[in-house]
Amino acid sequence: MDPLYPDGHQGLPNWSEEQLTDMTRVANENGVAMHIHAMGNKGVTRIINAFVNGGKDEMRNTLVHVRNIDEADYKRMADHNIYVTSGVLWHFAPDGQPEYMREHGTVPAGQEDKSYPMKSYFDNGIIATTHSDYPATSGSPDDPFGIMEIAVTGMLTGTGGKPYWTEELVTREQAITAMTLNIAKQMFIEDERGSIKTGKYADFLLVTKDVLSCPANEIHEAKPAATYFEGKKVFSM
Image (cartoon, rainbow, N blue to C red; front, side, top):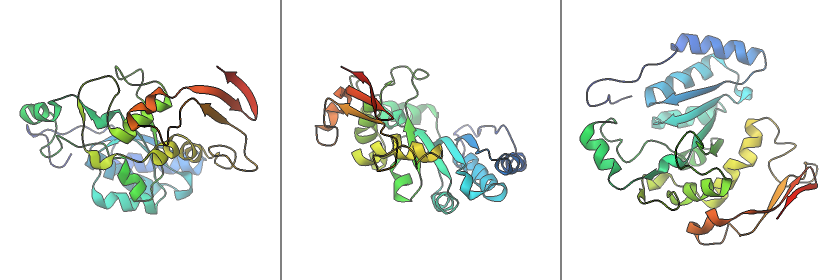
């Protein structure tokens, strides 16, 4: 991290930049895309360097989790077709959490009410996907509509607290894109799935609520009324 944590420490990387560069080169040359977990702006920069210097832009190498990004790295990610997958649960904070982190020095100074971007990816033309940390993170939703509500409102339904870093909340359309078409792109199957279009497999949900127009705090109430996979109904209420 830059700045360092209040006690002067910073996280330890698992690999050097040179090792990451070599691994990326070997993986990409053999048709394998890289997905690397990153926390901290220095770590993010190190991985981007490895993707740029050792990788192939067409391989859609991906940063995972991704806490803290230096402004200049957004452009490099966009320029080199670097993808992101990041959980949105981190946009929610229990009452007093920023103050607690500030008092106890659990994050670098200035990071108490921010860390995990989302909107900035869309603003910079970066392909971003999102997900839940269920069941790793206690209380996180295990359905797309709960995730969508957090992405849009910054709130975890049914719990106390408040959103933080609200500048990074996304629109409903962006949230849906992050869970559909962008995931298909990340998996190199956007010509087959991820959106409704002539020539693609007919994979889609019918839902009980219009998540594009209902009150934002009711998005989580949407349930699948029917599920279609490759044009065939495989579930109905």
